[in-house]
Length: 191
Image (tube, rainbow, N blue to C red; front, side, top):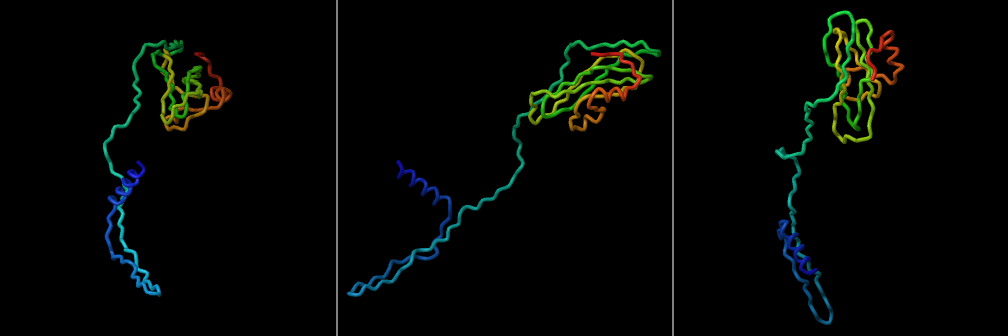
């Protein structure tokens, strides 16, 4: 069996290259008398050209797996806040979103504060333990509000993920920073 493998390997090596004989060999010339006089002779010379290998790239259509996140409508309970203030009330959705990577995160609207003609929507963002791998995910929370049309400022307590999408909101490290930013604002919703 070993001899068959060796013969097969030798045949494969010889078949994969081009061999050209450049010079014939000759046997040693020996004159036998009492004195031994010998001419060294020479081995044949061969020029061996191995296969030429070129490495590059090309563009081809191939099937690759894709993960698609489908947003489906589902009936869930959403907090509804009814605010009695001067002016015409309107129903609106206050939604906070963040784009995260690395690990899953949770975002929750904790409070809404009002001051003059401004609403402060205060949320928290927390990193969870489950890894997202190399994926990016958008997370959100929302409440329904019946109140006059007021300017809305979102403040998120927690670490801002390094994504351009997250530049829409103000991020702070703790609730003390929120208190300084919303001085004299009245809490109208607390989770």
